Image (cartoon, rainbow, N blue to C red; front, side):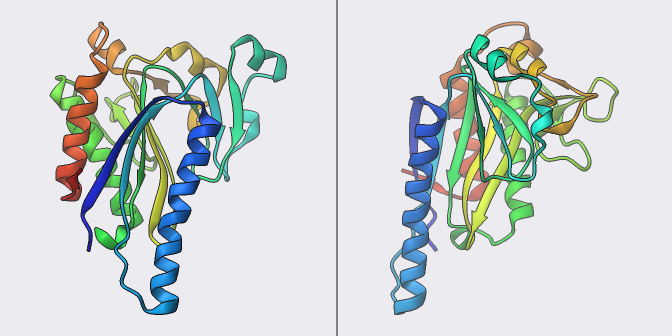
Length: 231
């Protein structure tokens, strides 16, 4: 089992470019696993943790509902936003500047082969990061992601999640709202939930948050929870 994880911060990258780069890395890991199985080799599979952000974009998961996008083509142009149908789970969400978008490309054979536990562990890393800033976050029963006041009528989502996995190799991941322009969420029904609000660290704290500080704290919690060694 290889618990070394290569960390990469891609900065602000066009969604399509990031998706292509993800797919290339993902395929490389799958090819190693395939070769190990077919040729009885023992090549170690690499793991990656990628942080990035995207220009304004809406993405729709493979089981999602296109009608949850409330903009037509002209509306997208006016908002300077793009729209993609992609191969992750989950419904529609928004990505934009001020988010930390995390793409763990992990061979779960190196950690644990349990997608449910994988999602709950990513959620826990976000929950702990929120706690670092004095914000109590948790889970909303029946939904993935991380919420503020999940047990109250004022429940609001601070982190969305959607993953894909093949042969226990993961891609896609989470979108954590830090200094995000939340107005963009008014153009969709986020994750198909039309009666709950969306929030960010900035909104909850009433001030801009240092992105690099959040990244370091989040990276540390992910590493500890997965018992991984970041390189």
